[in-house]
Image (cartoon, rainbow over all chains, first blue to last red; front, side, top):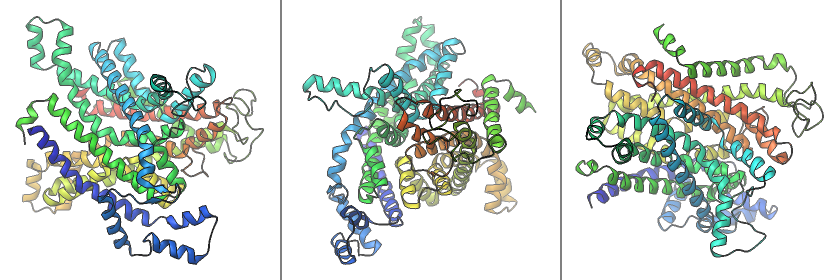
Length: 325
Length: 276
């Protein structure tokens, strides 16, 4: 229960942050050339000034900036994100349609990066400064320097165009209707390349941190004690070192949640996935500022939620946290 | 001197420095090898690399010389990496220093703002800034600087927290030094090395951010940027994949070089942490 209270307190502390972000971005968007009504008029193929005037009044855009901001925040409390003029639907609905693809992609990439980060990190730390370590560390550096969208494009060239093993884009095969397990398998097949593309840079970061963290923990006294007890090396690593070395990795997930969301903008564009990131890109190009602000809000919520979960996991992994605070 | 020797003892650091010097050489010699505008029409479109000695790396979809764009692109990437990093590090140092030195409510307010910037995915903020202020190269550089300062700020703050009550600072205070003099004249020089090392990370990320923005066609289309070329090459990916492949390798090499140099500086500055 104590953990929950602690994490709850952190959650409450993030409310001012959230408000700060919304107010900041709202005011920033006021500086944008053209508003929603301009975008709508452009969609309708132009119109007279009277219509624009009426529309502005209808959407409350004729009020002062502070009044608009107040209105916006008040509507947010009721989870009303406004109306997207481009999609002709409430913003909340547009985002809800796009959110699952992004969450699926992020979860898959995170699991991929986390799992292989641990595996490679452990292998590298076990053979420190020998060839497996050199190989893994070099690959890590190269992955870190690879622009994700370029890796995605090259993966499409190799796996979709030449080898024709995997689809080049989309979330499912639109030429046939599939159900149940076949739909799941089909979606998984479509997600292989995007997952690798988005996860690559995180894999590089995780394996590096895992290696450093393993090396750090391996020098601690309790490891020497475990060895002195006569435990074999595998048991020492798995039972004693791994659990402690995992702590910085878990912290990193929270820190990187935002970066990953940002990365999904590019990856979703490369693989034409119907996700939140691509929606963000489209709303910038189409000047759909209402949707853009909604995406900012939902992304910030998502990052805060991930950090909340990370707090809980962290407290489970490290019992010392309970006694603090 | 000991520092320089420590740096050159590590092979990856030397390789990194060599690669970085190559990229700088490309940027410097661009005008010399390719006196014509890199974005001007040069020949037939989509000539494969090595097919025509006039275009060693081939031409893109609209018949522009890829080699010329790679050389001029080095200028843009280094410019963006350099200037955006300076902006981010200066903002970060000022905010981190003030926050760490004064503590209390100043620290509270500044850290809340930093947290807000960190909660918001920085690529999304970059999109918002570009949407609002347009996408010429100056705006893009400033925008990248603005989204990248929180990490240097936190680092500077942490250094200041550990240094602000040291004896040399107390001595300075007893001597009646002004706050500004203490912050920037006494504490900052001691807090700087880790921040400078971290600047290499900021630089690597800045170059990647700009290339991603350019790939999405949201950066300045009127400069020869590697990201722009990758975005263009996407239209002919099916057959002429080299149009996208070549500039990608250029980005990879540059970012790798910057990271290796940063790593080398770090190891040379903290020999104790070497190999971590």
